[in-house]
Image (tube, rainbow, N blue to C red; front, side, top):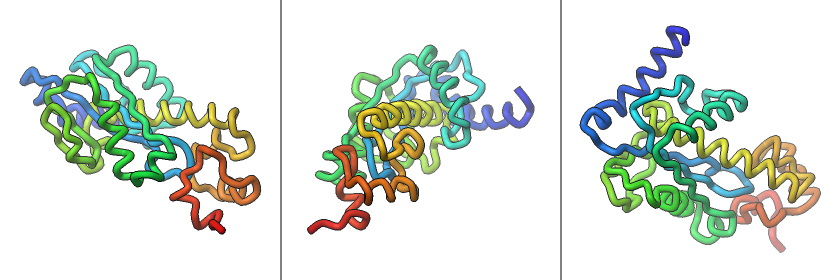
Length: 207
């Protein structure tokens, strides 16, 4: 590990270390997929042990897809708990993306039994434990960063499977985000059941 990477990892660990040193069961939480036009929003809740430290845990956006996949496997083999929660497109349309994200996070946290939850930006989940919302938490906390990787890799894998079920939209490439390719496909093919109707009204106007 080079010096820059070591410094980055130490900064992430510094936020979580006081909880571990106090014997607190600490969970990190994050989500992936709030902005796309299609697919679920996926949340992850991860309880990481103080040791062993996984060198490349970081904000998922800072890692390549290949690196995320590698670190995901390490997290899954090391974590004391991993919970995944989803809210599907119909739920997003029914209750809006913020409320759907909160619901996905509550689902992810079920069974974690953490005393403290470090959550990327979101608050007031009503969990059985202290909640601490941290803005840009995936770039500041080792536990939240681990959750960001789990949520991102899980959702990306699911979007690749949706490409097989709904070919022609390019889900495997853009993961449901509003790229020019995706918007052109919606206009050409019409929406599929995985599209968030509340997100695409300007792309495919109603009657």
